Length: 240
Image (cartoon, rainbow, N blue to C red; front, side, top):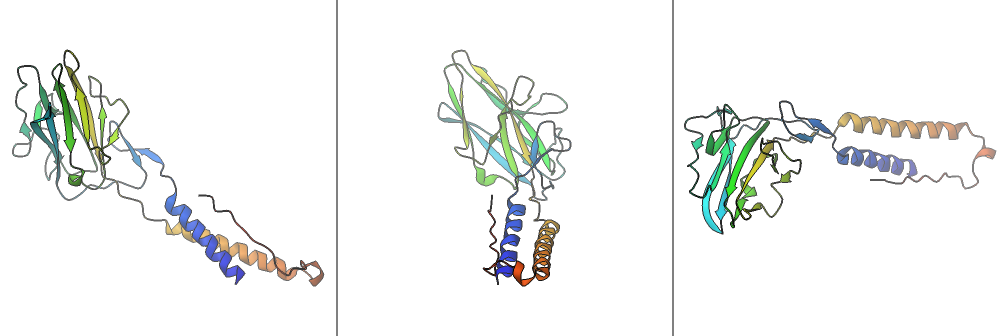
């Protein structure tokens, strides 16, 4: 009975360690920016769209849209992408910039169905004004969506925000003379890696091997060599 308990306990530990091991990081193929947890990526087969609602001084200003759609490209796609309106008289503006072939402003920017994509978001807030960008995480596809402030050339500053986390909004202050903000939004379709049966099986075999060796050693011992208690205590600390 004690041997069976040992097997079950050790097996549970192996299973738990395999299932909860920290993910390593690796570069995404064809990604200019990102890393993602190891486990594989796969393109979704269902189109999706997320809306960014932009508020100017608490009032509706414009809604921007980005996402993925069948047969869309990184260039302008008639019937899928929509051009942005021109800036206002104070330079106020909110739009996506096309990443190719040049800096065209878009109100709606769709990409093809793929495992990874990014969008360039541009917001210009006039002086003495406060704007807010908000989104509904219920619209998100499976995977990761992050937003990271960028420099003048749309190079991320390295402080990505998981868009699934509250408060699901950004507040932008135009300061005294007005401020332009640039962001990189990144999407990765992350598919969790299945639990490794090979690793689990190896651990289980190791447990059986340990028990078999222990029983063999005990069988070879003479009666005088056995502990008086007739049993050997076995404990194992479960470090998570």
